[in-house]
Image (cartoon, rainbow, N blue to C red; front, side, top):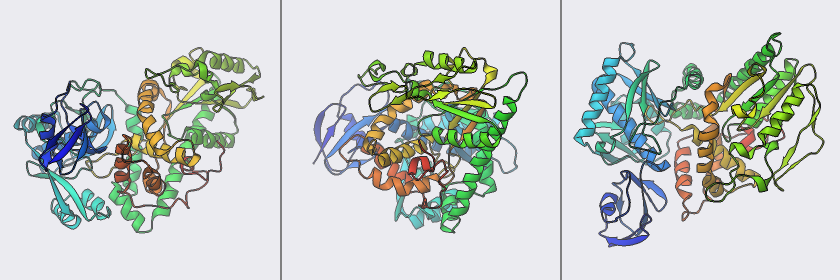
Length: 557
């Protein structure tokens, strides 16, 4: 017999060895407003078909949890891939990136034509049939060589190249009605769990729509992100030029000794984009009718805002302009006046954390030709201080304002729009593990933040992971709504970044104890970064954006 402690009920029960989580779930009675789709076993995410052979702690999850959404989303990607395989023989489908509250799917048909509405409806109908038939997702554990041979026979070169570089002796793969696929997340037990989804034509492909994270019984609202899509498409075009379709391709390039070349190309692409942005700012600065005087720069946590500001300042000086800079963080209200979250902790990400009235008043005075002393926030004392930093916008000067609320209209609503140039920085990861396993952009930024926080001695990996859900909620509320209002989007994702971060993150993530809730995320990230062949950071230049996170930057922060 084994004892299972259920965190949902705070009770324990005994079961026969080998019992599945599905059977365990049936024996615990607790409120289930939405279907249970996965679980955490000893703080590690597992599917409901997981068998218990020893005493375990179990927490059952629905779609409202991050882990639950990953399981549901991966299962839904499998469902779409299976349906497209049945409806469009010979076609390939690549679920390329999360966008517009869903996943963009690139469909390549043998004749080169784009998918039609009639074909999209046929795919939807096939998905509905599979859901109604309650087809099981079956998991198989196989030697890596055997799994590679299987996917070679199926013509899945993306999975072959990934598994060839995984370094694993055994790997898991799944089947759905005889259709084999590979996923690094667990899946739901069967297709009938996938009741809420949408498939629509989008940009010569399809968009797979997901349930709303707060109300899983309905679809998340579609949000058009045309600028974001174009940035992704641009990155994808460069990947094709470099012949890098997925992580397996990158790993093989590293093994073949091309890491230095990939680093140099990544740096060149980012620098090229910054030159283009600086030249556009210069052009608009010299516009006789609507001259730009303020550059507003924002982006989510760990997107590289500080380094982009510094590198952009260099390019603006090369254009003959004199950039002056301050951060919205310097206008934080004093700690005692900081708004609080429902749990009583400080809300450091909310809009009212910034004294936006004072900030805008100071900017208006600068635009009127006054010399203004701007504050500097002391994060140790939690006080706004005036230490003699003065800004005067004379001829040739342009003001750079950086911060998570920089694009919020309420921050500069009294300043004419034609005097402002807006930049949104994001990590739009253009590479995927394989054709059916996207990499969430938030993973990029979370790993950056964990490494930076740990190296600076600011927070442990556990503390950073614990804070991350609140950070993400604040980003969704305060930052991302203004992404598409930007004049330009800058992609700070680095083609070979995960391979470099692996060397730094492995030991840091290993410090998270197994008996804390944050271990779930640490375990997942460790598993994830092991897909990447490690690359030393010794050839990363000191001016690289990546240096902001791994250390060794020539910029001061």
